[in-house]
Every structure is written in C-alpha cells, then in structure tokens.
Length: 127
Image (cartoon, rainbow, N blue to C red):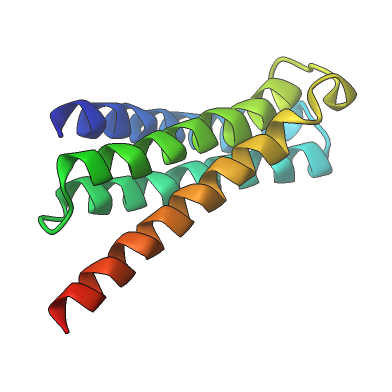
C-alpha cells in the first residue's frame, strides 16, 4: 500500500511543479496550442493522482485490487501525460511518438474500467 501511495505522492508533487512551470515559464516559450496540450497533461495527471489516493486509501479493496488499478493509472500517467510533456518541453516531434499518448489514454480507461468492475462486484456481494 505505501509503495503505491509513495509513487502517487511523487506524481502529485511533480504535477504541481509542472503546472507552475507551464504557467510561469512555458507560456512565453511555446504556442497557445502546445500550452493547452501541456495543461491537459497536468490536469489528467492531478486528477488521476487524486483517484489513486482514493483507490489506495479505500478500505474495501484488497492489496491486489489496489495494485492492479494503480499500475494501470501509473502507466496511463506515464504514457499519456509523459508523452505530452516530451512533445512540449523536450520538443520531440509528435509524429515520432504519436502512438504513446493514446496508449496512455487506454491505460487510464482500463484503470477506470477495472475500478468500476471492483465496485460492481462489491455491490453484488452486498445484495
């Protein structure tokens, strides 16, 4: 449990730093569209950090369930937000890594789907 919470805390810490970096440094150095993409990456990262805090703090999930959902969200943040950071900060051409962003989105979707299934199972068991 604490491993997931440690990684989640680091991702939250980085999201705040990257958000500030985008707002104060990047806004004068990149195009409006690139800045908008960067802000989307930060927003998705912070939203999923909050979800990870919930998942790993929820007493009704087993450690195995927490780990499964966490790994999907960790991978999703890494690939989705990370690829956008690479495109905007490192100026890697999007055409070179175009497939990574949707792959990350797919991991985020799978994390949400798995969490939904876990709640459905819990709901069925209570009835």
